[in-house]
Amino acid sequence: MFGKKGDITLKEKLVSYFGIDELGSTVPREILAGFTTFISMAYILFVNPSVLGASGMDKGAVFTATALASALGCFLMGLFAKYPIATAPALGINAFFTYSVCIGMKIPWQTALAGVFVASVIFLFITIFKLRELIIDAIPANLKYAISAGIGLFIAFIGLEDGGVIVADKSTIVSLGHFAGTTWLTIFGLVLTAILLVKRVPGGIFIGMVATSILGIVTGMIKLPTTFVSAAPSLKPTFLVALKHVGDINTMQLFVVVLTFLLVTFFDTAGTLVGLAQQAGFMKDNKMPRVGKALLSDSTAMLAGSLLGTSPVGAYVESSAGIAVGGRSGLTAVTTGLLFIFGVFFSPLLSVVTSQVTAPALIIVGVLMAQSMKHIEWEKMEIAIPSFLILLGMPLTYSISDGLALGIIAYPVTMIAAKRGKEVHPIMYLLFFVFLGFLWILNI
Image (cartoon, rainbow, N blue to C red; front, side, top):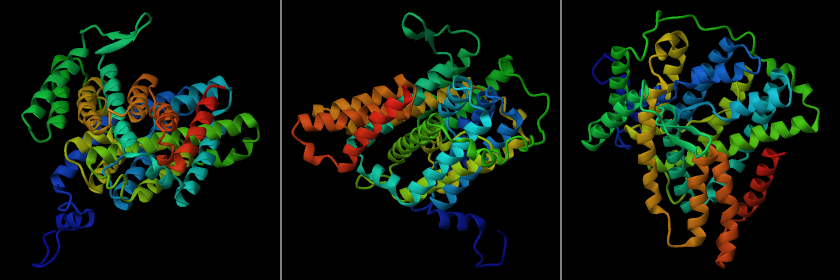
Protein backbone atom coordinates (compact mmCIF):
# COMPACT_ATOMS: atom_id res chain seq x y z
CA MET A 1 0.00 0.00 0.00
CA PHE A 2 2.95 2.28 0.66
CA GLY A 3 5.01 1.24 -2.39
CA LYS A 4 6.87 3.36 -4.86
CA LYS A 5 5.26 6.20 -6.71
CA GLY A 6 2.97 4.83 -9.38
CA ASP A 7 2.24 1.62 -7.46
CA ILE A 8 -1.45 0.78 -7.08
CA THR A 9 -2.63 0.82 -3.46
CA LEU A 10 -4.88 -1.83 -1.96
CA LYS A 11 -7.72 0.69 -1.80
CA GLU A 12 -7.36 1.47 -5.51
CA LYS A 13 -7.35 -2.25 -6.33
CA LEU A 14 -10.56 -2.73 -4.37
CA VAL A 15 -12.21 0.26 -6.04
CA SER A 16 -11.20 -1.03 -9.47
CA TYR A 17 -12.11 -4.70 -8.96
CA PHE A 18 -15.51 -4.09 -7.40
CA GLY A 19 -16.36 -1.00 -9.51
CA ILE A 20 -17.04 0.97 -6.34
CA ASP A 21 -16.74 4.41 -7.97
CA GLU A 22 -19.18 3.47 -10.74
CA LEU A 23 -21.65 2.34 -8.11
CA GLY A 24 -21.42 5.68 -6.31
CA SER A 25 -20.00 4.17 -3.14
CA THR A 26 -16.75 4.19 -1.16
CA VAL A 27 -14.53 1.53 0.42
CA PRO A 28 -15.34 2.62 4.02
CA ARG A 29 -19.06 2.60 3.24
CA GLU A 30 -18.85 -0.90 1.75
CA ILE A 31 -16.96 -2.20 4.80
CA LEU A 32 -19.50 -0.58 7.14
CA ALA A 33 -22.31 -2.16 5.11
CA GLY A 34 -20.66 -5.57 5.39
CA PHE A 35 -20.30 -5.15 9.14
CA THR A 36 -23.93 -4.06 9.42
CA THR A 37 -25.10 -7.09 7.44
CA PHE A 38 -23.05 -9.39 9.64
CA ILE A 39 -24.40 -7.87 12.83
CA SER A 40 -27.94 -8.28 11.48
CA MET A 41 -27.50 -11.98 10.68
CA ALA A 42 -24.90 -13.08 13.26
CA TYR A 43 -27.74 -14.66 15.25
CA ILE A 44 -27.72 -17.58 12.79
CA LEU A 45 -24.43 -18.72 14.35
CA PHE A 46 -26.38 -19.48 17.52
CA VAL A 47 -29.88 -20.20 16.20
CA ASN A 48 -28.82 -22.81 13.63
CA PRO A 49 -26.90 -25.03 16.10
CA SER A 50 -29.84 -24.79 18.50
CA VAL A 51 -32.37 -25.86 15.85
CA LEU A 52 -30.27 -28.58 14.22
CA GLY A 53 -29.02 -29.72 17.62
CA ALA A 54 -32.56 -30.81 18.42
CA SER A 55 -32.20 -33.44 15.67
CA GLY A 56 -29.22 -34.98 17.47
CA MET A 57 -26.46 -33.15 15.59
CA ASP A 58 -23.42 -31.91 17.52
CA LYS A 59 -24.05 -28.22 18.23
CA GLY A 60 -20.37 -27.28 18.22
CA ALA A 61 -19.81 -28.85 14.81
CA VAL A 62 -22.93 -27.16 13.43
CA PHE A 63 -21.68 -23.82 14.79
CA THR A 64 -18.41 -24.13 12.87
CA ALA A 65 -20.13 -25.52 9.75
CA THR A 66 -22.58 -22.61 9.80
CA ALA A 67 -19.78 -20.05 9.98
CA LEU A 68 -17.65 -21.65 7.26
CA ALA A 69 -20.53 -22.30 4.83
CA SER A 70 -21.81 -18.75 5.33
CA ALA A 71 -18.33 -17.31 4.76
CA LEU A 72 -17.79 -19.34 1.59
CA GLY A 73 -21.11 -18.20 0.15
CA CYS A 74 -20.33 -14.57 1.00
CA PHE A 75 -16.91 -14.78 -0.65
CA LEU A 76 -18.37 -16.31 -3.82
CA MET A 77 -21.20 -13.78 -3.93
CA GLY A 78 -18.77 -10.89 -3.43
CA LEU A 79 -15.74 -11.93 -5.49
CA PHE A 80 -17.49 -13.88 -8.27
CA ALA A 81 -20.96 -12.32 -8.62
CA LYS A 82 -19.88 -8.96 -7.12
CA TYR A 83 -23.13 -8.42 -5.22
CA PRO A 84 -23.55 -7.05 -1.65
CA ILE A 85 -25.60 -10.12 -0.75
CA ALA A 86 -24.64 -12.42 2.12
CA THR A 87 -25.50 -16.10 2.48
CA ALA A 88 -26.08 -18.42 5.43
CA PRO A 89 -28.19 -21.48 6.37
CA ALA A 90 -31.78 -20.42 5.87
CA LEU A 91 -34.25 -20.19 8.73
CA GLY A 92 -37.41 -22.19 8.19
CA ILE A 93 -35.78 -24.93 6.15
CA ASN A 94 -33.56 -25.78 9.14
CA ALA A 95 -36.72 -26.16 11.22
CA PHE A 96 -38.17 -28.42 8.50
CA PHE A 97 -34.94 -30.47 8.64
CA THR A 98 -35.20 -31.01 12.39
CA TYR A 99 -38.87 -31.00 13.34
CA SER A 100 -40.51 -32.40 10.18
CA VAL A 101 -37.88 -34.74 8.79
CA CYS A 102 -35.83 -35.93 11.78
CA ILE A 103 -38.37 -35.74 14.61
CA GLY A 104 -41.67 -36.01 12.68
CA MET A 105 -40.62 -38.66 10.13
CA LYS A 106 -38.09 -40.25 12.53
CA ILE A 107 -35.34 -40.04 9.91
CA PRO A 108 -31.76 -39.98 11.30
CA TRP A 109 -30.03 -36.63 10.91
CA GLN A 110 -27.27 -38.31 8.91
CA THR A 111 -29.80 -39.38 6.27
CA ALA A 112 -31.49 -35.98 6.29
CA LEU A 113 -28.11 -34.35 5.73
CA ALA A 114 -27.56 -36.69 2.78
CA GLY A 115 -30.90 -35.45 1.45
CA VAL A 116 -29.61 -31.89 1.61
CA PHE A 117 -26.51 -33.00 -0.32
CA VAL A 118 -28.54 -34.65 -3.08
CA ALA A 119 -30.81 -31.61 -3.33
CA SER A 120 -27.79 -29.32 -3.55
CA VAL A 121 -26.28 -31.38 -6.41
CA ILE A 122 -29.56 -31.06 -8.34
CA PHE A 123 -29.64 -27.37 -7.40
CA LEU A 124 -26.16 -26.84 -8.82
CA PHE A 125 -27.03 -28.77 -11.98
CA ILE A 126 -30.12 -26.69 -12.84
CA THR A 127 -28.16 -23.52 -12.06
CA ILE A 128 -25.34 -24.40 -14.47
CA PHE A 129 -27.91 -24.99 -17.21
CA LYS A 130 -29.47 -21.58 -16.43
CA LEU A 131 -32.93 -22.90 -15.59
CA ARG A 132 -33.06 -20.78 -12.43
CA GLU A 133 -32.00 -17.71 -14.41
CA LEU A 134 -34.76 -18.25 -16.97
CA ILE A 135 -37.36 -18.50 -14.23
CA ILE A 136 -36.23 -15.31 -12.49
CA ASP A 137 -36.23 -13.37 -15.78
CA ALA A 138 -39.75 -14.65 -16.55
CA ILE A 139 -41.30 -13.19 -13.37
CA PRO A 140 -43.06 -9.92 -14.37
CA ALA A 141 -41.84 -6.59 -13.00
CA ASN A 142 -44.96 -5.99 -10.89
CA LEU A 143 -44.49 -9.27 -9.04
CA LYS A 144 -40.80 -8.51 -8.51
CA TYR A 145 -41.76 -5.23 -6.85
CA ALA A 146 -44.24 -7.17 -4.71
CA ILE A 147 -41.53 -9.68 -3.78
CA SER A 148 -39.22 -6.89 -2.63
CA ALA A 149 -41.94 -5.22 -0.56
CA GLY A 150 -43.18 -8.57 0.76
CA ILE A 151 -39.72 -9.44 2.03
CA GLY A 152 -39.66 -6.01 3.68
CA LEU A 153 -42.90 -6.75 5.52
CA PHE A 154 -41.62 -10.20 6.42
CA ILE A 155 -38.36 -9.03 7.99
CA ALA A 156 -40.16 -6.15 9.75
CA PHE A 157 -42.52 -8.74 11.23
CA ILE A 158 -39.49 -10.78 12.35
CA GLY A 159 -38.01 -7.64 13.91
CA LEU A 160 -41.20 -6.80 15.79
CA GLU A 161 -41.42 -10.37 17.06
CA ASP A 162 -37.74 -10.63 18.00
CA GLY A 163 -37.94 -7.35 19.89
CA GLY A 164 -41.02 -8.39 21.85
CA VAL A 165 -43.15 -5.61 20.38
CA ILE A 166 -45.63 -8.19 19.11
CA VAL A 167 -46.26 -11.61 20.65
CA ALA A 168 -48.28 -14.74 19.92
CA ASP A 169 -51.87 -14.75 21.12
CA LYS A 170 -54.29 -17.70 21.10
CA SER A 171 -57.32 -15.48 20.57
CA THR A 172 -56.02 -13.05 17.94
CA ILE A 173 -52.97 -14.97 16.59
CA VAL A 174 -50.73 -11.98 17.39
CA SER A 175 -51.08 -9.01 19.70
CA LEU A 176 -49.08 -6.12 21.14
CA GLY A 177 -46.44 -7.31 23.59
CA HIS A 178 -45.89 -6.17 27.14
CA PHE A 179 -43.48 -3.24 27.13
CA ALA A 180 -41.15 -4.43 29.85
CA GLY A 181 -37.56 -5.54 30.27
CA THR A 182 -35.52 -5.97 27.10
CA THR A 183 -38.41 -4.86 24.88
CA TRP A 184 -37.46 -1.31 25.86
CA LEU A 185 -34.12 -1.84 24.14
CA THR A 186 -35.99 -2.48 20.90
CA ILE A 187 -38.14 0.60 21.38
CA PHE A 188 -35.09 2.74 22.19
CA GLY A 189 -33.21 1.42 19.15
CA LEU A 190 -36.20 1.90 16.86
CA VAL A 191 -36.80 5.51 17.95
CA LEU A 192 -33.10 6.41 17.77
CA THR A 193 -32.59 4.76 14.37
CA ALA A 194 -35.71 6.43 12.97
CA ILE A 195 -34.48 9.86 14.12
CA LEU A 196 -31.03 9.25 12.62
CA LEU A 197 -32.49 8.21 9.26
CA VAL A 198 -34.93 11.12 9.15
CA LYS A 199 -31.97 13.43 9.73
CA ARG A 200 -30.05 11.50 7.04
CA VAL A 201 -27.14 10.60 9.32
CA PRO A 202 -24.76 8.23 7.44
CA GLY A 203 -24.72 4.74 8.96
CA GLY A 204 -27.79 5.51 11.06
CA ILE A 205 -28.85 1.85 11.27
CA PHE A 206 -25.42 0.72 12.45
CA ILE A 207 -25.13 3.59 14.95
CA GLY A 208 -28.53 2.63 16.33
CA MET A 209 -27.42 -0.97 16.91
CA VAL A 210 -24.21 0.10 18.65
CA ALA A 211 -26.06 2.57 20.90
CA THR A 212 -28.68 -0.06 21.78
CA SER A 213 -25.97 -2.59 22.69
CA ILE A 214 -24.25 -0.03 24.92
CA LEU A 215 -27.54 0.82 26.64
CA GLY A 216 -28.22 -2.86 27.22
CA ILE A 217 -24.80 -3.36 28.83
CA VAL A 218 -25.07 -0.23 30.99
CA THR A 219 -28.54 -1.17 32.26
CA GLY A 220 -27.61 -4.80 32.83
CA MET A 221 -30.11 -6.10 30.27
CA ILE A 222 -27.21 -7.47 28.22
CA LYS A 223 -24.45 -9.32 30.02
CA LEU A 224 -20.83 -8.94 29.02
CA PRO A 225 -19.26 -12.32 28.19
CA THR A 226 -16.79 -13.76 30.69
CA THR A 227 -14.33 -14.56 27.87
CA PHE A 228 -13.71 -12.87 24.55
CA VAL A 229 -11.88 -15.53 22.53
CA SER A 230 -12.55 -19.25 22.15
CA ALA A 231 -11.25 -22.02 19.89
CA ALA A 232 -13.41 -23.09 16.95
CA PRO A 233 -15.40 -26.27 17.77
CA SER A 234 -14.39 -29.39 15.81
CA LEU A 235 -16.17 -30.25 12.53
CA LYS A 236 -15.43 -33.96 12.92
CA PRO A 237 -18.95 -35.05 14.06
CA THR A 238 -20.61 -33.73 10.85
CA PHE A 239 -17.84 -33.37 8.23
CA LEU A 240 -18.60 -35.42 5.05
CA VAL A 241 -21.24 -37.46 6.92
CA ALA A 242 -23.70 -36.68 4.11
CA LEU A 243 -21.60 -38.59 1.55
CA LYS A 244 -21.59 -41.72 3.68
CA HIS A 245 -25.40 -41.84 3.83
CA VAL A 246 -26.45 -40.99 0.25
CA GLY A 247 -27.36 -44.65 -0.20
CA ASP A 248 -29.95 -44.32 2.55
CA ILE A 249 -32.15 -42.23 0.23
CA ASN A 250 -34.06 -45.15 -1.26
CA THR A 251 -37.73 -44.60 -0.39
CA MET A 252 -40.47 -42.42 -1.83
CA GLN A 253 -40.71 -40.58 1.49
CA LEU A 254 -37.04 -39.59 1.29
CA PHE A 255 -37.36 -38.55 -2.35
CA VAL A 256 -40.17 -36.20 -1.27
CA VAL A 257 -37.86 -34.83 1.44
CA VAL A 258 -35.14 -34.14 -1.15
CA LEU A 259 -37.67 -32.47 -3.45
CA THR A 260 -38.91 -30.28 -0.60
CA PHE A 261 -35.36 -29.20 0.28
CA LEU A 262 -34.85 -28.35 -3.39
CA LEU A 263 -38.08 -26.42 -3.97
CA VAL A 264 -38.06 -24.42 -0.74
CA THR A 265 -34.43 -23.37 -1.20
CA PHE A 266 -34.96 -22.65 -4.90
CA PHE A 267 -37.82 -20.23 -4.45
CA ASP A 268 -36.67 -18.76 -1.13
CA THR A 269 -33.37 -17.79 -2.75
CA ALA A 270 -34.95 -16.61 -6.00
CA GLY A 271 -37.39 -14.39 -4.14
CA THR A 272 -34.69 -13.04 -1.85
CA LEU A 273 -32.26 -12.24 -4.69
CA VAL A 274 -34.93 -10.42 -6.68
CA GLY A 275 -36.10 -8.45 -3.65
CA LEU A 276 -32.59 -7.39 -2.66
CA ALA A 277 -31.70 -6.49 -6.26
CA GLN A 278 -34.80 -4.29 -6.41
CA GLN A 279 -33.85 -2.60 -3.15
CA ALA A 280 -30.30 -1.87 -4.34
CA GLY A 281 -31.46 -0.63 -7.76
CA PHE A 282 -29.68 -3.35 -9.74
CA MET A 283 -32.64 -4.45 -11.85
CA LYS A 284 -32.38 -3.37 -15.50
CA ASP A 285 -35.25 -3.93 -17.95
CA ASN A 286 -36.77 -6.35 -15.43
CA LYS A 287 -33.56 -8.40 -15.36
CA MET A 288 -30.91 -8.85 -12.70
CA PRO A 289 -27.39 -8.44 -14.13
CA ARG A 290 -24.99 -11.33 -13.40
CA VAL A 291 -27.87 -13.29 -11.93
CA GLY A 292 -26.28 -16.52 -13.20
CA LYS A 293 -23.15 -15.88 -11.13
CA ALA A 294 -25.22 -15.00 -8.07
CA LEU A 295 -27.23 -18.21 -8.39
CA LEU A 296 -24.09 -20.29 -8.93
CA SER A 297 -22.56 -18.74 -5.80
CA ASP A 298 -25.44 -19.67 -3.49
CA SER A 299 -25.89 -23.15 -4.96
CA THR A 300 -22.17 -23.87 -4.49
CA ALA A 301 -22.42 -22.67 -0.90
CA MET A 302 -25.38 -24.98 -0.34
CA LEU A 303 -23.37 -27.95 -1.64
CA ALA A 304 -20.40 -27.07 0.57
CA GLY A 305 -22.67 -26.57 3.57
CA SER A 306 -24.14 -30.06 3.21
CA LEU A 307 -20.62 -31.53 3.23
CA LEU A 308 -19.57 -29.45 6.24
CA GLY A 309 -22.71 -30.36 8.16
CA THR A 310 -25.52 -27.83 7.97
CA SER A 311 -28.98 -27.35 6.44
CA PRO A 312 -29.41 -25.55 3.04
CA VAL A 313 -27.55 -22.27 2.56
CA GLY A 314 -29.09 -19.39 0.61
CA ALA A 315 -29.16 -15.63 0.10
CA TYR A 316 -30.15 -13.81 3.29
CA VAL A 317 -32.82 -11.13 3.58
CA GLU A 318 -30.74 -9.45 6.31
CA SER A 319 -28.41 -8.35 3.50
CA SER A 320 -30.96 -5.58 3.11
CA ALA A 321 -29.56 -3.97 6.28
CA GLY A 322 -26.16 -3.56 4.62
CA ILE A 323 -27.72 -2.35 1.39
CA ALA A 324 -29.73 0.17 3.38
CA VAL A 325 -26.54 1.78 4.75
CA GLY A 326 -25.05 2.06 1.27
CA GLY A 327 -23.54 -1.31 0.39
CA ARG A 328 -23.56 -1.74 -3.40
CA SER A 329 -20.55 -3.89 -4.30
CA GLY A 330 -19.15 -7.33 -3.64
CA LEU A 331 -16.82 -5.83 -1.03
CA THR A 332 -19.81 -5.71 1.31
CA ALA A 333 -20.34 -9.48 1.02
CA VAL A 334 -16.60 -10.19 1.32
CA THR A 335 -16.47 -8.14 4.53
CA THR A 336 -19.40 -10.11 5.93
CA GLY A 337 -17.67 -13.37 4.99
CA LEU A 338 -14.48 -12.35 6.79
CA LEU A 339 -16.49 -11.50 9.89
CA PHE A 340 -18.09 -14.96 9.82
CA ILE A 341 -14.58 -16.44 9.89
CA PHE A 342 -13.58 -14.20 12.80
CA GLY A 343 -16.89 -15.01 14.46
CA VAL A 344 -15.77 -18.60 14.94
CA PHE A 345 -12.99 -17.44 17.26
CA PHE A 346 -14.76 -14.53 18.92
CA SER A 347 -18.12 -16.18 19.42
CA PRO A 348 -18.51 -14.95 23.04
CA LEU A 349 -18.60 -11.33 21.83
CA LEU A 350 -21.55 -12.06 19.57
CA SER A 351 -23.74 -12.67 22.60
CA VAL A 352 -23.78 -8.90 23.15
CA VAL A 353 -25.74 -8.43 19.93
CA THR A 354 -29.10 -9.76 21.05
CA SER A 355 -32.31 -10.00 19.05
CA GLN A 356 -33.50 -6.78 20.73
CA VAL A 357 -30.45 -5.02 19.25
CA THR A 358 -31.00 -6.24 15.68
CA ALA A 359 -34.81 -5.93 15.77
CA PRO A 360 -34.91 -2.14 15.12
CA ALA A 361 -32.64 -2.57 12.10
CA LEU A 362 -34.96 -5.20 10.62
CA ILE A 363 -38.04 -3.04 11.20
CA ILE A 364 -36.47 0.05 9.57
CA VAL A 365 -35.17 -1.97 6.63
CA GLY A 366 -38.70 -3.29 6.20
CA VAL A 367 -39.87 0.31 5.83
CA LEU A 368 -37.22 0.96 3.19
CA MET A 369 -38.06 -2.16 1.18
CA ALA A 370 -41.80 -1.52 1.35
CA GLN A 371 -41.27 1.57 -0.80
CA SER A 372 -41.24 -0.60 -3.93
CA MET A 373 -45.02 -1.04 -3.52
CA LYS A 374 -45.48 2.35 -5.18
CA HIS A 375 -44.36 0.87 -8.50
CA ILE A 376 -47.07 -1.82 -8.58
CA GLU A 377 -50.01 -1.16 -10.94
CA TRP A 378 -52.65 -1.28 -8.21
CA GLU A 379 -55.38 0.07 -10.50
CA LYS A 380 -55.28 -3.19 -12.49
CA MET A 381 -56.92 -5.93 -10.45
CA GLU A 382 -55.26 -8.70 -12.44
CA ILE A 383 -51.95 -7.32 -11.16
CA ALA A 384 -53.09 -6.10 -7.75
CA ILE A 385 -54.51 -9.43 -6.53
CA PRO A 386 -51.41 -11.65 -7.05
CA SER A 387 -49.15 -8.82 -5.88
CA PHE A 388 -51.19 -8.42 -2.70
CA LEU A 389 -51.12 -12.15 -2.02
CA ILE A 390 -47.32 -12.07 -2.20
CA LEU A 391 -47.14 -9.00 0.05
CA LEU A 392 -49.46 -10.45 2.67
CA GLY A 393 -48.49 -14.08 2.22
CA MET A 394 -44.80 -13.73 3.10
CA PRO A 395 -45.23 -12.34 6.63
CA LEU A 396 -48.42 -14.25 7.47
CA THR A 397 -47.09 -17.67 6.38
CA TYR A 398 -43.67 -16.78 7.82
CA SER A 399 -42.15 -17.96 4.53
CA ILE A 400 -40.84 -16.19 1.44
CA SER A 401 -41.45 -19.25 -0.74
CA ASP A 402 -45.05 -19.76 0.49
CA GLY A 403 -45.92 -16.11 -0.16
CA LEU A 404 -44.34 -16.35 -3.58
CA ALA A 405 -46.37 -19.48 -4.28
CA LEU A 406 -49.69 -17.75 -3.51
CA GLY A 407 -48.96 -14.89 -5.89
CA ILE A 408 -47.58 -16.96 -8.74
CA ILE A 409 -50.53 -19.37 -8.60
CA ALA A 410 -52.96 -16.43 -8.72
CA TYR A 411 -51.17 -14.50 -11.49
CA PRO A 412 -52.06 -16.67 -14.55
CA VAL A 413 -55.64 -17.01 -13.29
CA THR A 414 -56.22 -13.25 -12.96
CA MET A 415 -54.45 -12.49 -16.24
CA ILE A 416 -56.60 -14.99 -18.13
CA ALA A 417 -59.73 -13.54 -16.47
CA ALA A 418 -58.63 -10.12 -17.73
CA LYS A 419 -58.17 -11.58 -21.25
CA ARG A 420 -54.43 -10.95 -21.04
CA GLY A 421 -53.38 -14.59 -20.96
CA LYS A 422 -51.17 -14.18 -24.04
CA GLU A 423 -49.01 -11.69 -22.12
CA VAL A 424 -48.09 -14.31 -19.53
CA HIS A 425 -44.68 -15.87 -20.10
CA PRO A 426 -44.88 -19.65 -20.73
CA ILE A 427 -42.62 -20.25 -17.75
CA MET A 428 -45.17 -18.53 -15.50
CA TYR A 429 -47.76 -21.10 -16.60
CA LEU A 430 -45.27 -23.84 -15.79
CA LEU A 431 -44.62 -22.28 -12.38
CA PHE A 432 -48.38 -22.30 -11.75
CA PHE A 433 -48.36 -26.11 -11.77
CA VAL A 434 -44.98 -26.37 -10.02
CA PHE A 435 -46.23 -24.28 -7.10
CA LEU A 436 -49.48 -26.21 -6.89
CA GLY A 437 -47.37 -29.36 -6.54
CA PHE A 438 -45.08 -27.57 -4.12
CA LEU A 439 -47.98 -26.67 -1.79
CA TRP A 440 -49.39 -30.19 -2.10
CA ILE A 441 -46.01 -31.72 -1.10
CA LEU A 442 -45.77 -29.44 1.95
CA ASN A 443 -49.18 -30.57 3.14
CA ILE A 444 -49.02 -34.34 2.64
